[in-house]
Image (cartoon, rainbow, N blue to C red):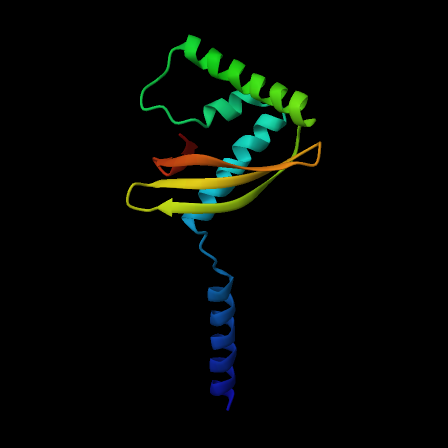
Length: 132
């Protein structure tokens, strides 16, 4: 009886430990990463947002500065047209595991009450999800 009790307790512990292990879906990871980049943009961390963009080759400093200026203009435009982006949620995500790409759909909630769903194409590069 005592051996059975130890066996039963061991099985319960094993089931509990294995039940706690939750593997994150790659598509979810890509969508969460896309949302994180846009959250950084809204917080004013424009360089982090631009740094999340995939480039096959190093880009010149002038182009990097232009991308930062464009991101700032995007935020300013949303502020003037819609009273800013107040909240971002993940709407959907569609992964292509063969090409290591994902289409993350984010929903913007604007200050004027309107909503918009945008597509953020993502690519996995050396294990890190980046915007295309």
